Length: 220
Image 1 (cartoon, rainbow, N blue to C red):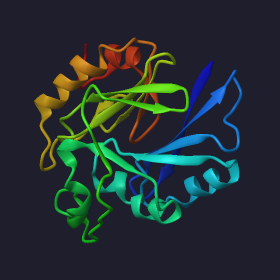
Image 2 (cartoon, one colour):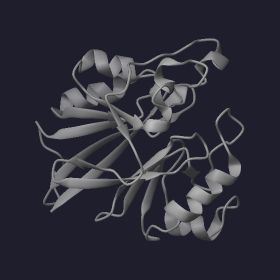
Image 3 (cartoon, rainbow, N blue to C red):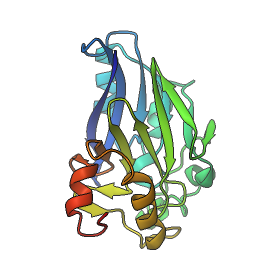
Protein backbone atom coordinates (compact mmCIF):
# COMPACT_ATOMS: atom_id res chain seq x y z
CA UNK A 1 0.00 0.00 0.00
CA UNK A 2 1.23 3.49 -0.84
CA UNK A 3 1.64 5.83 2.13
CA UNK A 4 1.94 9.62 1.83
CA UNK A 5 4.71 11.31 3.79
CA UNK A 6 3.98 14.97 4.60
CA UNK A 7 7.19 16.64 5.75
CA UNK A 8 7.15 20.24 7.02
CA UNK A 9 9.91 22.79 6.48
CA UNK A 10 9.46 25.91 8.62
CA UNK A 11 10.63 28.77 6.42
CA UNK A 12 10.93 32.54 6.45
CA UNK A 13 10.12 35.35 8.85
CA UNK A 14 6.52 34.18 9.34
CA UNK A 15 7.61 30.61 10.19
CA UNK A 16 5.46 29.25 7.40
CA UNK A 17 5.04 25.51 7.06
CA UNK A 18 6.09 24.59 3.55
CA UNK A 19 5.45 20.92 2.85
CA UNK A 20 7.17 18.23 0.84
CA UNK A 21 4.68 15.50 -0.01
CA UNK A 22 6.09 12.19 -1.20
CA UNK A 23 4.95 8.59 -1.33
CA UNK A 24 6.40 5.49 0.28
CA UNK A 25 5.47 1.92 -0.53
CA UNK A 26 4.84 -0.99 1.82
CA UNK A 27 5.68 1.12 4.84
CA UNK A 28 9.06 2.22 3.46
CA UNK A 29 10.20 5.85 3.00
CA UNK A 30 10.11 7.36 -0.49
CA UNK A 31 12.85 6.13 -2.77
CA UNK A 32 15.14 7.92 -5.22
CA UNK A 33 13.35 8.91 -8.41
CA UNK A 34 9.86 9.03 -6.94
CA UNK A 35 7.58 11.98 -7.59
CA UNK A 36 6.80 14.63 -4.96
CA UNK A 37 4.88 17.85 -4.50
CA UNK A 38 6.15 21.08 -3.03
CA UNK A 39 3.30 22.78 -1.19
CA UNK A 40 3.42 26.51 -0.35
CA UNK A 41 7.13 27.25 -0.84
CA UNK A 42 7.85 30.22 1.40
CA UNK A 43 10.78 32.59 1.77
CA UNK A 44 14.27 31.06 1.49
CA UNK A 45 13.25 27.53 0.42
CA UNK A 46 16.86 26.27 0.17
CA UNK A 47 16.51 23.73 3.03
CA UNK A 48 13.53 22.14 1.30
CA UNK A 49 15.22 22.11 -2.11
CA UNK A 50 18.43 20.70 -0.62
CA UNK A 51 16.43 17.86 0.91
CA UNK A 52 14.75 17.14 -2.42
CA UNK A 53 18.12 16.91 -4.14
CA UNK A 54 19.70 14.74 -1.44
CA UNK A 55 16.72 12.40 -1.48
CA UNK A 56 16.71 12.11 -5.25
CA UNK A 57 13.02 12.95 -5.43
CA UNK A 58 11.40 14.41 -8.56
CA UNK A 59 9.13 17.42 -7.94
CA UNK A 60 6.16 17.27 -10.28
CA UNK A 61 4.04 20.18 -9.00
CA UNK A 62 3.99 23.27 -6.83
CA UNK A 63 0.60 23.18 -5.10
CA UNK A 64 -0.52 26.38 -3.38
CA UNK A 65 -3.15 26.36 -0.65
CA UNK A 66 -3.54 30.10 -1.23
CA UNK A 67 -1.57 33.03 -2.59
CA UNK A 68 -0.56 35.15 0.40
CA UNK A 69 3.06 36.21 0.22
CA UNK A 70 4.37 33.87 2.91
CA UNK A 71 3.01 30.90 0.94
CA UNK A 72 4.31 31.92 -2.49
CA UNK A 73 7.58 33.78 -1.84
CA UNK A 74 9.68 30.75 -2.81
CA UNK A 75 7.80 29.83 -5.98
CA UNK A 76 10.24 31.61 -8.30
CA UNK A 77 13.23 29.94 -6.65
CA UNK A 78 11.63 26.52 -6.99
CA UNK A 79 10.85 27.31 -10.64
CA UNK A 80 14.49 28.28 -11.19
CA UNK A 81 15.57 24.88 -9.88
CA UNK A 82 12.85 23.00 -11.80
CA UNK A 83 11.90 25.16 -14.82
CA UNK A 84 9.14 22.88 -16.12
CA UNK A 85 7.34 22.32 -12.82
CA UNK A 86 3.64 23.28 -13.01
CA UNK A 87 2.06 25.69 -10.52
CA UNK A 88 -1.42 24.83 -9.22
CA UNK A 89 -3.77 27.23 -7.42
CA UNK A 90 -7.51 27.76 -6.98
CA UNK A 91 -9.15 29.68 -9.79
CA UNK A 92 -10.29 32.46 -7.42
CA UNK A 93 -6.66 33.52 -6.96
CA UNK A 94 -5.41 33.09 -10.51
CA UNK A 95 -4.20 36.72 -10.64
CA UNK A 96 -2.76 36.95 -7.13
CA UNK A 97 0.68 35.55 -7.89
CA UNK A 98 1.53 38.52 -10.09
CA UNK A 99 -0.17 41.20 -7.97
CA UNK A 100 1.65 42.41 -4.82
CA UNK A 101 -1.48 44.16 -3.59
CA UNK A 102 -3.55 40.98 -3.70
CA UNK A 103 -0.84 38.70 -2.30
CA UNK A 104 -0.15 41.22 0.50
CA UNK A 105 3.57 41.62 -0.24
CA UNK A 106 3.05 45.30 -1.02
CA UNK A 107 2.08 45.78 2.63
CA UNK A 108 5.58 44.62 3.58
CA UNK A 109 7.29 47.14 1.33
CA UNK A 110 8.94 44.28 -0.58
CA UNK A 111 6.69 43.40 -3.51
CA UNK A 112 6.79 39.71 -4.42
CA UNK A 113 5.57 38.21 -7.66
CA UNK A 114 5.60 34.65 -8.94
CA UNK A 115 5.07 33.02 -12.34
CA UNK A 116 1.53 32.64 -13.59
CA UNK A 117 -0.26 29.43 -12.61
CA UNK A 118 -0.21 26.44 -14.90
CA UNK A 119 -3.45 24.84 -13.70
CA UNK A 120 -6.46 26.30 -11.92
CA UNK A 121 -8.20 24.20 -9.30
CA UNK A 122 -11.77 23.98 -8.05
CA UNK A 123 -13.36 22.32 -5.08
CA UNK A 124 -14.16 18.73 -6.00
CA UNK A 125 -11.12 18.29 -8.24
CA UNK A 126 -8.69 15.45 -7.58
CA UNK A 127 -4.90 15.31 -7.94
CA UNK A 128 -2.81 12.17 -8.30
CA UNK A 129 0.66 11.71 -6.81
CA UNK A 130 2.18 8.35 -7.67
CA UNK A 131 -0.59 5.85 -6.75
CA UNK A 132 -2.37 8.21 -4.35
CA UNK A 133 -5.37 10.39 -5.07
CA UNK A 134 -6.07 13.62 -3.19
CA UNK A 135 -9.32 15.56 -3.03
CA UNK A 136 -9.44 19.33 -3.28
CA UNK A 137 -11.75 21.06 -0.81
CA UNK A 138 -12.51 24.74 -1.34
CA UNK A 139 -12.12 26.24 2.15
CA UNK A 140 -12.36 30.03 1.68
CA UNK A 141 -12.55 32.75 4.30
CA UNK A 142 -8.91 33.43 5.09
CA UNK A 143 -8.64 34.12 1.38
CA UNK A 144 -11.19 33.54 -1.40
CA UNK A 145 -9.25 30.74 -3.06
CA UNK A 146 -7.99 28.81 -0.03
CA UNK A 147 -7.96 25.05 -0.55
CA UNK A 148 -7.36 21.92 1.50
CA UNK A 149 -5.66 18.80 0.13
CA UNK A 150 -7.17 15.60 1.54
CA UNK A 151 -5.87 12.04 1.28
CA UNK A 152 -8.79 9.99 2.54
CA UNK A 153 -7.18 6.53 2.93
CA UNK A 154 -4.46 7.80 5.30
CA UNK A 155 -6.65 10.43 7.01
CA UNK A 156 -4.32 13.33 6.24
CA UNK A 157 -5.19 16.89 5.20
CA UNK A 158 -3.05 19.91 4.33
CA UNK A 159 -5.27 22.80 5.38
CA UNK A 160 -3.24 25.95 4.69
CA UNK A 161 -4.27 28.88 6.87
CA UNK A 162 -7.91 27.86 7.30
CA UNK A 163 -7.48 25.97 10.57
CA UNK A 164 -4.67 25.81 13.12
CA UNK A 165 -4.04 23.90 16.31
CA UNK A 166 -6.23 25.90 18.67
CA UNK A 167 -6.91 28.73 16.25
CA UNK A 168 -8.18 29.73 12.80
CA UNK A 169 -6.88 31.85 9.97
CA UNK A 170 -6.93 35.63 10.15
CA UNK A 171 -9.86 37.33 8.46
CA UNK A 172 -8.78 40.97 8.62
CA UNK A 173 -7.05 40.93 5.24
CA UNK A 174 -8.52 42.20 1.95
CA UNK A 175 -10.57 39.36 0.48
CA UNK A 176 -11.05 37.64 3.86
CA UNK A 177 -14.42 36.94 5.46
CA UNK A 178 -14.90 35.56 8.96
CA UNK A 179 -18.35 34.03 8.49
CA UNK A 180 -17.20 32.33 5.29
CA UNK A 181 -14.20 30.84 7.06
CA UNK A 182 -16.25 29.43 9.94
CA UNK A 183 -18.72 27.93 7.48
CA UNK A 184 -15.90 26.31 5.49
CA UNK A 185 -14.42 24.81 8.64
CA UNK A 186 -17.74 23.43 9.86
CA UNK A 187 -19.03 22.22 6.50
CA UNK A 188 -15.78 21.04 4.88
CA UNK A 189 -13.11 20.33 7.47
CA UNK A 190 -15.20 19.24 10.46
CA UNK A 191 -16.99 16.67 8.29
CA UNK A 192 -13.70 14.78 7.82
CA UNK A 193 -13.08 11.79 10.14
CA UNK A 194 -12.01 12.91 13.60
CA UNK A 195 -8.80 10.87 13.24
CA UNK A 196 -7.70 13.04 10.30
CA UNK A 197 -4.32 14.68 10.90
CA UNK A 198 -4.28 18.31 9.77
CA UNK A 199 -1.13 20.03 8.57
CA UNK A 200 -1.62 23.80 8.88
CA UNK A 201 0.24 26.68 7.30
CA UNK A 202 1.76 27.68 10.65
CA UNK A 203 2.37 25.91 13.91
CA UNK A 204 2.06 22.25 14.91
CA UNK A 205 -0.17 19.66 13.36
CA UNK A 206 -3.40 18.62 15.04
CA UNK A 207 -6.43 16.41 14.36
CA UNK A 208 -9.97 17.17 13.32
CA UNK A 209 -11.27 15.53 16.49
CA UNK A 210 -9.07 17.67 18.72
CA UNK A 211 -10.11 20.90 17.02
CA UNK A 212 -13.82 20.02 17.05
CA UNK A 213 -13.59 19.42 20.78
CA UNK A 214 -11.38 22.28 21.92
CA UNK A 215 -10.77 24.95 19.27
CA UNK A 216 -12.02 28.14 20.99
CA UNK A 217 -12.86 29.90 17.71
CA UNK A 218 -15.02 27.26 16.05
CA UNK A 219 -16.58 24.30 17.86
CA UNK A 220 -18.41 21.58 16.01
